[in-house]
Image (cartoon, rainbow, N blue to C red; front, side, top):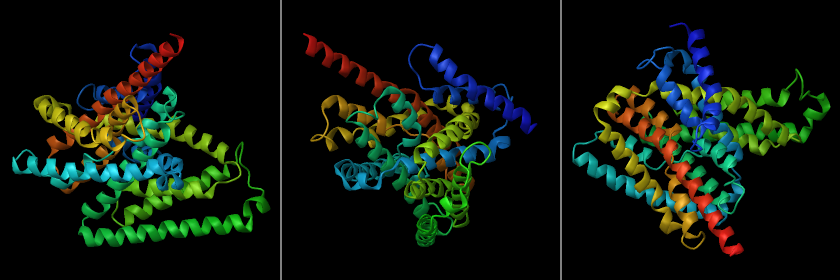
Length: 389
């Protein structure tokens, strides 16, 4: 298939998705319509576009998604109550996931134990951020807790993937992680040296119009750490997330301007391509032949990753906020796509499980944030009625 034709249809879906989301009732996020649109133009429906043609651009979109998630992470938050609770909560989910997947393995339902166990502990922070910002959730008291839980739900599964799913095994994965940490440290040291020397001011590097120097060096940083992760046999999402963390430490004078540029490039171009391509990759036939498998993973995401939040946040959040945390932390997609890709390429994951897992993630993005924001609206309305009554 002609790559330019594929690109046209993908960009068209990406452009139409926010319009459809605004026109149709129900306040569904645009990302849902990107995934649905990807299914429609994909090889199993209209066959207007091929996911293979979009492979590189989709990888860039996934990288930008995790770059922005890492950039948003405030390291001090992880030493505060939201971060500490998020870490404890993730380990509770990990223990539950191991128990559940062990039962499924013994029952013969799955044979890809490790991939499924990791998948059930993920949270799609990068996907949630634009949805929750539009709904005003991140500006309220719940914001730091959501962010900490999401950051942990992305970073810890990435580390687990690095340790358990590399071709060189856990020992090789550990060495790869050390190598990746060294590459990240070198990047940090170089950036701090450049800042200390004041080279940006000395060279008067242009930031606007045709210059965009900081943005270009951000892309160098992103590509470099993603390439390092790939060379170490790790998934690119780890390199992208660490690139965001490093970029946060860079903190140029025009940090606010840089953030706007990154969001414009990421959410305006590459991230939509990733979501549309994810829809194109969905094995709809496999899902339709066994929809119960998708529903099983969907329920397990809710039970394993979501429900523990009801108990873990009892001393910090009220009942409605804890239920919001349940639905938000159970939302997963980008890492599920990465896990499915790694699992199918290595032959460790059954194709039907990979399709059902990604389908469950897409369904979680469709349902869970909508329920969480609806709970917020009802809670706000109840508070207003109580105050006026």
